[in-house]
Structures are given as C-alpha cells and as structure tokens.
Image (cartoon, rainbow, N blue to C red; front, top):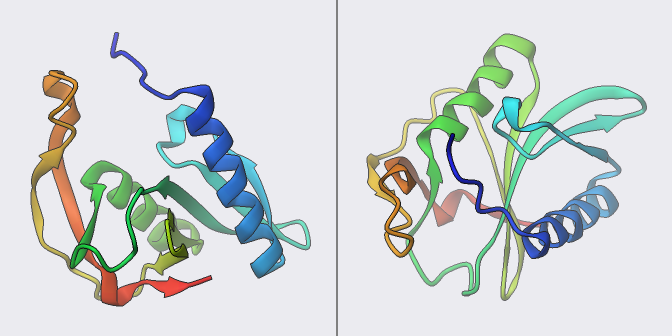
Length: 139
C-alpha cells in the first residue's frame, strides 16, 4: 500500500484555503474522500458546481512561469468538467495571495515528468501538467 504523506498541517492549510474560496465565491466546500483524487466539491445553494484542488506554495505566485499539478489530478478534474458539467478549479495559496486556475475547453498544457524528489519515493515522480501562471487569477 502507498504511503500517505498528508499531515495535519496540510489539512489545516487546505481548510484555510477552502475558507478563502468559500468567502470570496459564495460557495460551500466539502472535503472529498481520497477515491476522488481531488480535495473538495463546491456547492452553491445546495447544488454541486465545481471540484477544487488546493495547494500551498511557499513563494510568490510569479516566481516560476508555470505551476505543476499531477497529471492524474488534472485529468480527474477535467473528467468532472466534461462528464458532470462541474467547473474544475485549481487554487493555490502563495506567499502573496490566493490564486486560482479554472479549466476551459481547449486547454492543453505541457506534460513532463516531475514531482517530489526529496522523499526518495519513486511513486512521487510522475507525469505533471504545467499550468501557466498567466492563466491564474487572484481571489
């Protein structure tokens, strides 16, 4: 079975980012189980409207030209978009604010091998999608 690296601090960060999104966008976010691959499903007036993946990064949003996301997570978000009509949102808390990317029809981004090399866990190295920072908007 695969080791899980998620810590209580990671969960606190997720909750904090979710609260920012809820307040700014008039949404209610509910944590998803691991089988869905993404962090939250968002509701407005009791109706599911989006799936949301959140991350925290310890740099300013424009430090790098792209932001990476696991290709598996990206594809799952796009699947929710195409099959269920739910928006796919990738939100990131940077040192200089919370920013988000919303998937649009026709989005195609560079895919490379990437991930975490510091854990010496081969399963942390995987295909990742590079989302241009220019596609992210501040919340």
